[in-house]
Structure formats: C-alpha cells, structure tokens
Length: 391
Image (cartoon, rainbow, N blue to C red; front, side, top):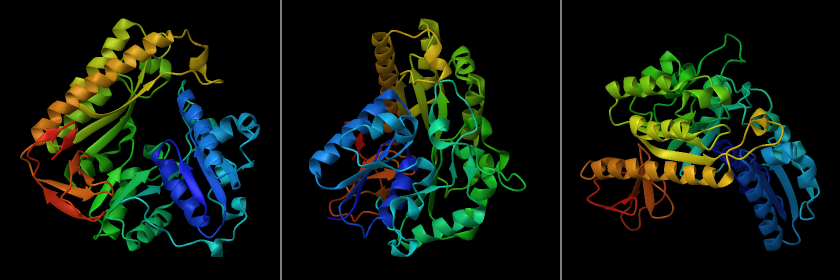
C-alpha cells in the first residue's frame, strides 16, 4: 500500500500534509499523522487518530509530526503505536523522511482549492497559545518562492488558491525591506491573470496593511470572505490574552470594509471561558457576533495548555466554559441562518467540491446539480434553504 497522511488542525497543516503526501507518494507502507496542539482537545484527537491509524494499518511504519508532536514530544514518543517522530521544522525536508527530492511526485491537488503556505511560526506570545513552541519564530517565503508554488498548483488545475500560515499578516517582516502582505497579494494577482479565485486564511485584523485593505475592498478575484483571528469581543479579556487589538478595532475594520464591499462575509475565531471571564465579559464576547455579523464562527472552549501564562490564571469551571461555548455557537448559528436566508434568489459563483456541494465566494455552502465535476466553477441562484445548505 502507498503512504497515507492524516492531517489535523489548521489550513497550514493541510497545505503541509499535501506536500508530505507528495514527498511520500512512491513510498510503501508508511502512515503519517500531522498533529495539532492548539487545544487540549486537539491533542486528544491526535492520539485518537494515531490509534485508529495503527488499528487500520497494523504493519505500517507510523510516524508523527506537527505541533503536538513537538510540544509534547516525550508523551507521543512513548505511545506504543508510534514508530518515530519527525521534527515540525523538518517535516517539509525530504531527508527527514529518508527520501530523495528526485523521488517526489509532482504536486497534486487533493482538494478543489490549493492551500499555499506563505509563512510559518509566530513571534507573538498570546497567553493561551503553545503554537510558537511548536512552530518557532515567524519565517516568510519570498515573493518568488510563493509565485513558484502557486504556479505549480495552477498547472495542476487548482481553480482556487488559499494563502495560509500561522500568522499570515506578519508575512514579510523578516524579509529584506520588510514587505507587507498586500504587496505579496498584488504580485500574485498581477503575475497570474488566470487565477480567478484567491482566498485568505485567518488574518489578524489589526495588521491588515493599507494595500491589502484596498485589494479586499475592490479586487473581485479576492473572495468576499474575511476570517478574523479575533478570539474575544471583550477588551479586558483581549488584554489578558495579550492580543494586539481591542473590540473597536475589529468593529471599525469591518465597518470600513462593508462601505466598499457590503457582501463580504465575516468569520472569526472565538474562545469561550477564558480564565477570569465573568458573565459581563462573556456577554461582550456574545454580542460581538451580531455586531460584526459573524457567519463563519470557530468557537473553542478554553482549555489550559501547560507552560502558558493563561494556565496559571484563575480558571473558569469546565461546565461553565462548555455552556458559554454552546451559547456562542448558538448565536453564530442564528446570525448565519439570517444571512443564508438573505442569499436566496441571489446569483452566486460556486466552486464544486467532491461531495455534491460547493462553496460560493463568501464561503456559503450550496448544493450542486447532479454530476457536476469537482473543481467546476458555475453560477447558481439558490431558491431555498434546508439545514444550512442552499438549494
């Protein structure tokens, strides 16, 4: 059997897993688990994935890489199912897998969109986060390197490109001349006029440079979908997280964007039950959903990560954390339902996926006509909504 790669966590991991899969395409009997450490739940799911993979492939060589394997190296090395660990910083180096660069297969598009990692690591020290321990300091690909990666994906037939990273808006800070992300995006769009859809992964709103704002506001090839690394709608919580923005920064950013592009869909990461959070702070977190119109919400119940400052703060009892997470998810669902209803009767350009559905530019999920090939771009006008799916 050929190698298989299981990816957990972020879009950056998806991008890296595709590259690992390409490196190992000609290897027999290897299983890789590309792990995630963003929460304790993510680490638990990584362990589950390892056990499932070993049960499914009892005689394969099982290797683990990724953030969880870096942050909790000894624990994963001690698992009887694991044959070895590959350092997170080395996982895109063929030598780490004992294969030659010449043996790699050409890039293939496993999804209908290509995830292109333009940056890795993080220089910030949010009090809840272990990712800098797992990924190291911020490192950027040059514009030339990104253009080369995108060119390979476009040649392989990718109809949409997603720029990913750990802290994408910090791209360029370590490069000569300290270019900003807007310069990279402008270079991409100028170099590849055939690129019809460019999507950005999670962005730190306070670091969106004027050039990138202008492109989001007026460039139709950039999808009308902005996912914010928001984390909370409460200012005191944001300060205790050591985030670099306050609530008003996010509100002002979205207000200004909607003046130019009213159809833009907003997503956000939100943490429920951060240490010291009281009912008033939770209420502020809850109310930001409607104020920003968050329709793509990633809600994380807070879980303490050993070695982080937040783990030493007064903790919110677990049942309250989970109850607040449920309330945040319910509010996102309410706002999302209203938004989806407003899309009925409006033509949407949809990118077909493999499961009989597709995503519009605003990332709304739409049912496809039977037999639509994955990767097809088509214009559809929804007539009704059933269980979150536009039909």
